[in-house]
Length: 322
Image (cartoon, rainbow, N blue to C red; front, side, top):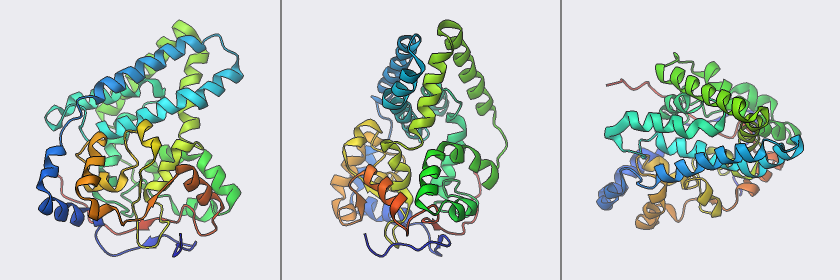
């Protein structure tokens, strides 16, 4: 792609993130975009269907051999679980029931979490707010790899290992970079999740529980859908810190590929982000974007100038909580 970053350190910038200014410009020119904000009336039904599909799958895999458990976890169940993590991403922006029903959104995220096997939704919500508010913020945005990750995972083999271990780093990195007190919702999330895991174990044995958890770990690691983790904010072109992807995998991921549009308008649900791009086409059509998440993973592993260090970082002042 040309003009790529070099290894050795993050790309430090001393400007504000670009999304705030672009949002102001677009809304001034196209105020009708405000009508796209608000809940997605179909999200709760789609998510509910996916949750019950996975519960049915738990029953169907209970007598399979272990090799088929892991095969279907990677090829099917993990894809649904990864999609559910992205539904939880959307729900964290209150697009399931709207801003006035915040508690309904929190509890629905806990429901969407059930097939994932590991409590996730409440902790994700807590840190994802910072990712939007302090994009690239040093010690604030836990989406940014640590210095150790950037230093160590710098060869093709190590970067491949890093991709496999992504779920581990995403889980542990917040505890090191920006530790926060455990919330009541996180405790409830864990209690509900482990209760359902125990019920599934009691009804159908260990294999369905392993099917769910293995699918989550495998498909959040080295998997075509996981290309979005790298595609969203890793700096493939110097000076650009957020990228969109407009390919078919958006159908499985609640349009998370429309990531430039999402950061410009986080309160617009994924189903309407293509309309943002259509209305404000001149703001997006000429920006660099990705054609393939598989190609993103390939380039990340084998391009010497790409790695965990390929991120923009900035110093941010903590906003005062209202």
